[in-house]
Amino acid sequence: MTTEILTQEDLKQFRMQLMEDLKGLLENHSKKASRQWLKSSEVRKMLGISHGTLQNLRINGNLPYTKLGGIMFYKYVDIEKVLEANSTSKNR
Image (cartoon, rainbow, N blue to C red):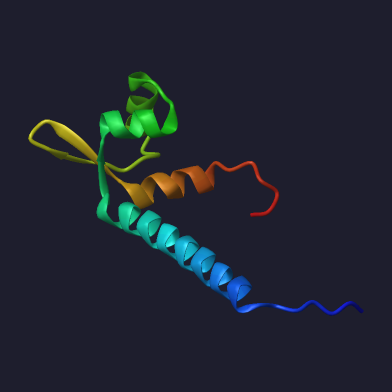
């Protein structure tokens, strides 16, 4: 078993890296939370699908939406649920 000596500088670097990592996680979480509703174009871009594919997801009832003034909005959490439901991972 080897012994390593930690200096105050090592601890300071660790603290700074930890703070940066936490800040990044919090910023990422707040961005998702602030974007609860997405427009069709944002959903298509996010999923890399065409207008017709998004329309089929709506028609088949696979992706819930809300229409307001001719604009369709989708909940971010609903999109995540559709992705999870269609996951081919064996870890489900």
